[in-house]
Image (tube, rainbow, N blue to C red; front, side, top):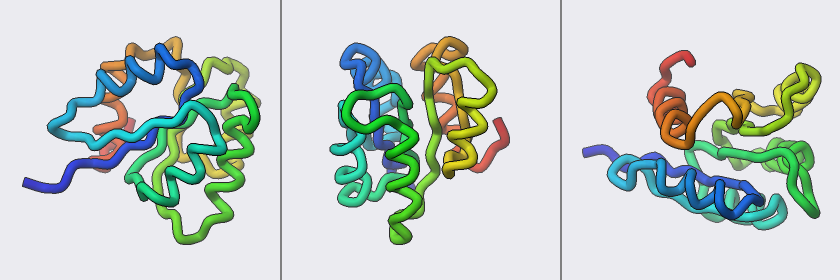
Length: 127
């Protein structure tokens, strides 16, 4: 039995945050979550997740700012999946340029489909 994958969810919508937590199988994943980017950065450093699921549109500090801060922290080696409602190509390009590994649109996946995608990413499969 291998250790569980550690996932950090940074999502300001409380309902979505809760749905994502439910969707990730507790047998496979250890989940931490935050409702804003400031807490997310702190939690990322403490929790050292295998993967961060990051929203873009958040109060105080948006996902782009979180990406910049995460990439400045050289001790943090984690996969970052941006999960956003922003549909424009330039939004995805900006996130990827700032260091996101993947850009997924919330409208294209249910929380359970998203959990499966994340598992595929962590297992090294192409999505």
